[in-house]
Image (cartoon, rainbow, N blue to C red; front, side):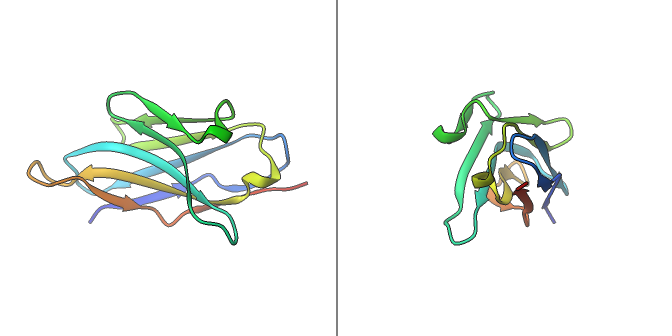
Length: 121
């Protein structure tokens, strides 16, 4: 059983910083990509950032320069460093991994349950 578990969410003041973590548990063969998504109340889930095993990263245009994604493939972990946080960053943040459980598997998407980030004074 493969599970993704996010942590690090919480309440932060505007202008503050927060780092989210995501750990993959269970036996896997390899990870193709890891991403962070977020969903604000009443809005659709949106992509925040993606990182590939090749080392490339991609961010939502509105978040470039404030958010940074990183992957520790030795620990099967992803991180999202968030800075200069704004109230509109308030959302549930989800971790996503495109991974293969076995060498013969096709890559499949796995999701965590999310961690709440609230930016408020």
